[in-house]
Length: 380
Image 1: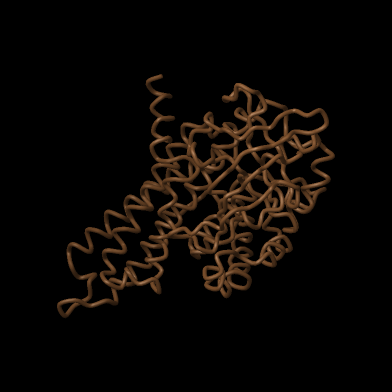
Image 2: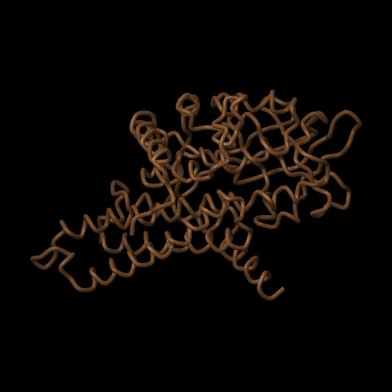
């Protein structure tokens, strides 16, 4: 079925994204995979092409649009290209809303121009070694010392952790902690006491730097409090719907693309004297996956439309996230099986898709957490 959620303007933007990928990303991605990190130059190139800060007001150099469909186009094209190293969606769709919605005018003048140009790379530090998806269990503390907070704690699995110039840190600002006592503090590169640990060795997404972060008596000026004190949990809950939708958009696009690659492969690959595509089992597998992808696409596209209208709630976003990512995992696994031994070779796209996509059901809230959110909405 023809998709009808995009306008000619969105498709023109898609062409821009594809050109950027072909020129600035794909020729270098293999080297970035080897290095475990992308070049800072590609961030600045993304800024020059208008791919950063899509929702940031134009006065700060951004795109000035709250139409999420532009972000969806960007996410889809990066997923189809297998370009997992450059975390533009994290920068635009996860960190960006905290800066545009919560920052003061002075903070916006300080941070948003660099955010849109690629000079300032951003990250958000929620997860801790002992908490995982449990945001209420955060132990990092920020003690009020008059004109500053004294920040202490550790974070892990932080995407963009090595490159980030600006990190939004979730910390307890009440002694008793818990969801009613958390605040968002912005920690900038070079602040004394702020240290980065290992660039973590993951099974996939090798080019995307993911790090441990440590805060040892870090003096964070009161001017770097984002939003109101002790309101972080409500801010996080408000923004998680967009984060989870962004993951779902990428998952649906990745599943569709790997299926297309596999259809082409089984048409060419022969076994027992004929193409694999002539075998009934292979045709049934393709039929099942194509139908599942089509059904998922219809739901995710509806969520994109609803979010662009400001109507997507946490429950539907959770449903899209768990369903689309589990579909991606299932489809890629079945496609790898249809490739046989070649599917296990990293030179084949399906092998990379298998490794890169496995985390999709984990970050942004695990499948189990998504089901809990949906279940509570139904059963209390």
